[in-house]
Amino acid sequence: MAKSNVSKKPISEEEYTTNKVLTVFSVCLLGVLVLMFVQRQLDYASTWRTGMMTVRALLGLGIVGVLWGLWLLVSERTGKRTAARRIVCGRHVLIVSIVLIACMTAVYYLGTQPIKGLYVVLPALAVYYLVYHSYAPEFFLIAVDAGVAAGLIWVAHRAALSASYGSMAYAALGAAVVLAIAQIACVYGLRGKKGVLQRSGKTVDLHLSRNAYRMLTVTPVVMAVLVAVAVLMPTAALAAMGIAAAYLFITAVYYTVKLM
Image 1: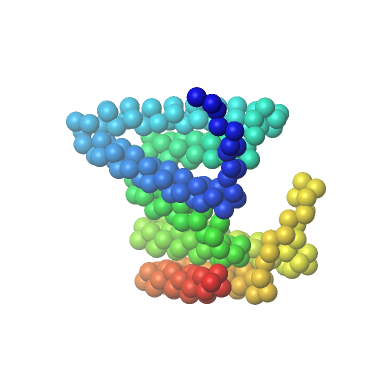
Image 2: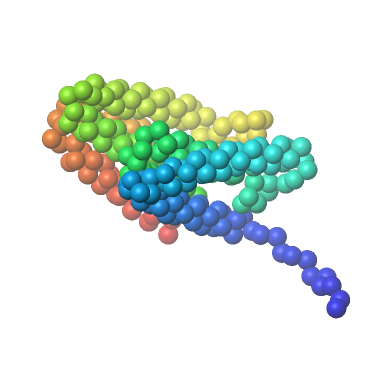
């Protein structure tokens, strides 16, 4: 049979981005299923040993993945392999492997308690990745601000319930204030450069909208205030978290309409 002379059509940037987002969601879903299996094994004395063997095996898999990712990265940097529009490339393999090692290390040393948080963290990572590729850059940063603030409010709320860790609430407030100041300083610098950065000798335009600088200045201040409310009035912590979620929802609607 004669070979086909029709060349394979290269994948477009839009298709590549779609494939990356779907892959991230699939990997995060698989991670949640693996965590459910591990938790089920560790919750019972009869299967605890099997669960720990599974955790060790996943740790080993993560280490192998890091070595593989480094090998791919070196091959890509030396020109032996191209990473252009590839799902399986050195950087992606390294990120997945490092996350796997971090998750399994936490479970190995702390037991099943971190798994409850990972049930939230992994889907959140997938959603943030979708937002990063689908929305304006400033909305991604706004979403990060709201997510970090929600986490700090939760830390403050948990610390308020414990006399031994009360200082953690003020540490959370300090972190919120420091992050707000750092972001405002960065926004001020970007405003002076009109949203254009120089990276590795290349010019990167962030394509920030007219209201981006105002939103990126107001949002961290609002989130820091909400964290302060949760610290100073522990009974209002859940209300503060609800306000942060409502703020994110309203801005999400605004930026979604702008996409239309």
